[in-house]
Image (cartoon, helix red, strand yellow):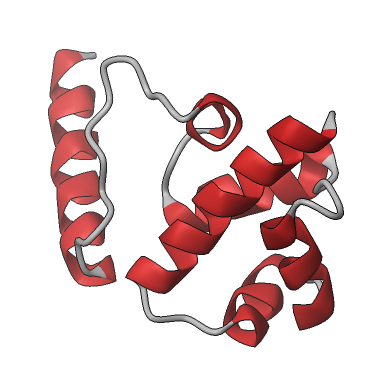
Length: 101
C-alpha cells in the first residue's frame, strides 16, 4: 500500500474507532494486534495485512472497500449506531434474506 493510501486507511480506522469511543488498546485486543500497531495503522506508518484488514472491517461492520476507498456503493453507514442496534438490524436482514431463498 502506498503512503497516501495508508494514511487514508488509517484516518478511516481512527474515525471508526473514535466513533465507538474505543482506545487503541481496545481495538488492538479485538483484532489481535498491539495498541502500538493500531497507532501505526492510524498514522499511516504501517499498513494492515490482508487478514488484519478483514478483521478491522468485520469489527467495525464495514466493507474493506470502505476502508480502502472510503465508499460503500449501495451500503448504509453504520457509524454511530450501537452494537446492539447493528446486531438487531443484521438479524432482521438475515431473516429477510432467508425468506427470499
